[in-house]
Image (cartoon, rainbow over all chains, first blue to last red; front, side, top):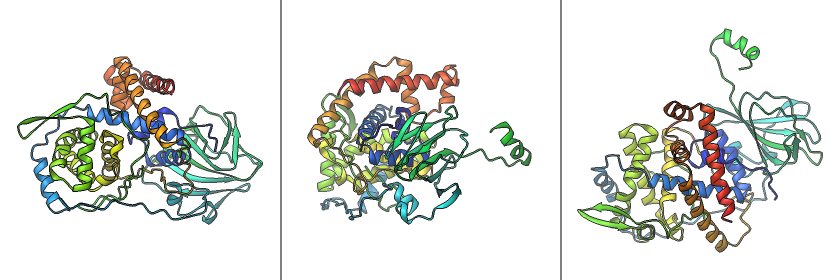
Length: 221
Length: 225
């Protein structure tokens, strides 16, 4: 695989330090599963973050902490040698959706309940526990433009099958596009096959006021 | 690495923590750290800490674990305190982190040198799942769709070591104000907007300084290859 569009440093550093909401993390982690190069960069950011933790002043009060810990260990397997843990991997034919995405949607691309968006496009919404992002899988028919969607804020798009092209270039499996409100783009799916991509966006601001909801589209917020 | 910390329940185990084979903080050039234990001053360099981890993994050695606890516990607690600003919660999260270190010690690869990066990732993931009540999705090296590294592992180890070292060097060479911004925003300790207010800088300047610092770090990583 030849990935050309990678995770930016800012995003990767935020992922390394746990500073990224779940939806964004899902796109970054799925890109990482396809991109050894970004995994190496992640390791460095994590090493630096660990250095920074090591360098933190010991300002916290830990008197009594060890005694509490020791009491907990007494009920554990202290002193007993353990066999090394093994990881079990089950053989599956190479899926379109890598982990951790596959577990989030509950199966591979073919097994999902795709909901029509019109013009031959489909989507599957993916629930997360953060309140900041909206996450969905999109399937765009080969050769067709992506249905119009608004860019309230940031958008991450990770291609998993087929490809799309826009002003930023061509994006194929594993490629990640980071867009913000400044980017005007009209992505078109490649003609070779349907394009499946993971799209993460900032959830639009939800206003409880009816007045604000009415003027929201006018103000563009 | 896959660290699945789900629904934190006291005393239960923490899912699977797989060590990440490329994560190898430079072991040699770090200065030895000193800590005080039972009235005597002990010196723990990264290799010693890794050996202690091994001892905990193989022999469930409580004395070895105590040294690790006294070294990392206060740092993990300070980290948690900065994230949560709640001393009691910080203590609990530190205890949970160190309990996970005890339970999962056999998953730490002693060849990786300093266990700090491994312990940091445990602390970070616990913070996210227990405090923010979110998952932190991670890649799974056992997934059939996972694209493995193509270079020989031994080369990768060496390369990783050199790059981590050059990144550290680069971090130390950053101008003070950039290093401080990166380091403070790194811990989610201070949001960019608060940093902007504190330093009396426009938000855009704080963001661009952090971006510049990261770009410099990135450049040095490429130069080290």
